[in-house]
Each structure stands twice: as structure tokens, then as C-alpha cells.
Amino acid sequence: MTVLGYVAPRPKKWPLRRLAGLAILAALLVFALLPLVIGGPDPLKQTLRLALKGPSAADWFGYDHLGRSMYARLTAAFRLSLGLAGVAVVTAIVPGVLLGVLAAWRGGVIDRIVSTVSEAFLALPGLLLVLMLAAIVPDQPIMLYVGISLVLWVEYFRITRALARPLLASPAIEASRLLGFGPLYIIRRHLWPEIAPILLTVGAHGAATAIMAVAALGFVSVGVRPPTPELGAMMTELLPYYEEAPHALLQPIAATFLMVLALQLIAGKDKP
Image 1 (tube, rainbow, N blue to C red):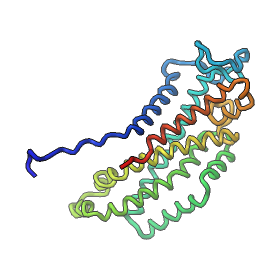
Image 2 (cartoon, one colour; image 1 turned 90 degrees about the horizontal axis):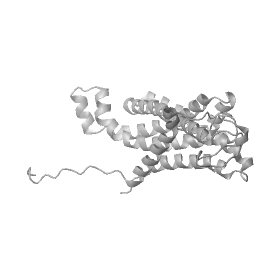
Image 3 (cartoon, rainbow, N blue to C red; image 1 turned 90 degrees about the vertical axis):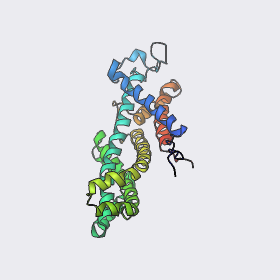
Image 4 (cartoon, one colour; image 1 turned 120 degrees about the vertical axis):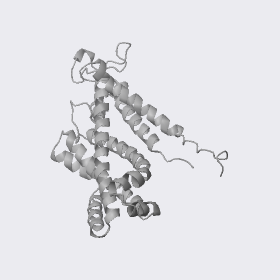
């Protein structure tokens, strides 16, 4: 091929679906973090004369049954759900990837031991494990974080192990070994570029699963409990008032839907 005949490959464009998901997630993050920048009402402050007051020009989100600002409670609930999901996913990815690479690299006894431990975690339903931890130490978001991380790491381990095995046997990595390059170089140069896009997709799915788990546990009064603003707990609190103030009940439902929708759009499979 001559120099003049060479055509540089076009950069791969992100699908419109992923861009839409990122836009929704960015908007939710701005909404959640805005009170920390410009200030806002206290999510726990009660003003009973404003109970179940609907949205107005002064307050677009209205008030709940105890006269607490729905705007303040929604933003606080967003921060809690997104923060828990993000930290849990990152915490699960790190050991999952390291153990997956270790098992694929060393094989033998180490592979069998780590695989057996992961299968033991799979034998216990994930939601049941989170439920048990949340019931043992109630009203502690850190227990939800620990439980969700313990559930998610297995998926990252299995994916990394499955992807790393054929890569480690490839001629490129064999050449790097013969040239004397160490494990860190091989992981950074050969493994991570191949594994990272898939892990990021699975990570978005994991964050959506974590958000749904936190909301579900809050809805059945096992996870974070009132008065702490949490989307599932807010639905439970506002359910008896769905006739008088449907707007208040719909807000945490819509918030959960938008967060999960954004993450599912980001994680969606690319069409060929």
C-alpha cells in the first residue's frame, strides 16, 4: 500500500442511544449536586402547614405529607442512590478484575480456588445476601454497599477470566513475554484495552441493578429508613397519599425510572 493510498480509519462514533443515556445521567447528576453548590432547603425540615402542597412557581416539586421539600429530598435521594451504586460498582470491579486476571494467568490451583469461591457466592441469591446484611445492621447505607459489592464482583471476575485466557495465549503477549516485559506492561498494553469496554458496559448494568436493589429494600423498609431521603422509602411513605397528592408519589418513581433508563441506554449492546 502506498502512502497516497493509505486511508486512516475513521474514529468510531458513539451510538445515539449511549449519548442519550449519558445526557440523561449528566442532567441527573447536575440536579443532584446543585443544592451542594448553590444551597437549598433542608430535606429533613418539616413545615406541616405545607403538607402535600402541590408544585408551584415558587417550588416546582411541592411538599410531602410532613411538609418537607420534595426538591430537597429528591436531590438527597439521588445523591444517595447514585453514590452507593457508583462506589459499589467500583469496589466490585477492582477485586473482580484482579482476581480474574490472576486466575487466567496462573491457572491451576489458584484458578480452581478463586472459581470455587465465586461459585459459592453465586449459589446464594444476590438480593437475599443484601437483604440479610441490611437486616443484621439496619438503617446503615454502608451495609447495602457491602452487600451489593459482594454480589457484583463475581460477574466481573468471570468476565475478566473468560476474556483474559485467550488473550494471554495470543502471539502478541507471548512476544511481550519473550522481550522481557512484566505483568504490569502486559496488562496495561494488551489486556486492559480489550477488557475495559466490556467491563464498562457491565458496570452500567451493575449500577442499574444496585439502584433497583437499594430502592426495593427501601420500599419494603429493610434498607435505608425514614427520615433519611431514599427513593424506595419515599415511595412507601407517600403511597397512602396517592389520591391527595399523586405528584408527590410519582416523583421518586420517575427518579428511579430515569436513573435506570440512563444506565441501561449506556450499557445497551451496539448493533453491528
